[in-house]
Image (tube, rainbow, N blue to C red; front, side, top):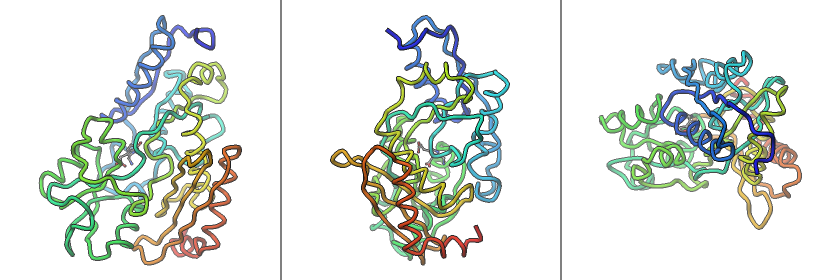
Length: 312
Ligand SMILES: NCc1[nH]cc(CCC(=O)O)c1CC(=O)O
């Protein structure tokens, strides 16, 4: 039996990239199984983040550009919930909105995609790696300072096309997106967290609704994965404490190890010459507190000076 009185109709707001539609369709089918008599529908939308492709997101308003239009659809009642990649959800949310479920994680790590090289270590000096993520760029500069990093934006298909056209020797993408779209065979190497610590929330789906609609939260509660939610909440607390809404080279990654949360994070200068790195372990009771503990540890390792030099 479904845990709540079954809804008659649920409308899911989603971006229209292939990955976003896959994720929304995935949530649609899970809800349809829970509520067979319900009409579960998708409302596809284009966001500012999808339109602005010529500039780095960090220069035009950041992650919020991927969620604003979906939130507007929640506010005006056109949709009941919105499905996001947790990585794209701003760390600080307006109080009208709440994250009502975080689904199980795909592989949370970054992946190397290349027709030429099987690993970063195989790439010769001057070889060109495409990424527009400050986090990936700083880590590449720190560990492989002889590689060239050049900007790469666009949805997954666009990025793969630019690689195939020869604009780059390799590109770095989230393994999760490639796997979800059936493009897992494009992955030459999954980058270990030691080489490329993932972004807060990477690989996890988030479901957002109006805070004023507890019935929507009850409908989707069965889709929440408690372990993933704890990991992602710890990661987001790190990012919130250190970066706020600013775009900085920062990674935060939590794993379950022996029933505890093992949380790692870094803050770096974009050129990778300065990097603060720290790790903490703690129980599942208060993931946000563990995130704040890691943020304090990173400050002790010099994160504050690095952030100050970024002008944030
Ligand atoms: N920044 C865009 C974005 N948001 C989520 C994913 C991949 C899937 C995920 O991490 O959940 C991607 C693409 C990428 O980073 O390669």
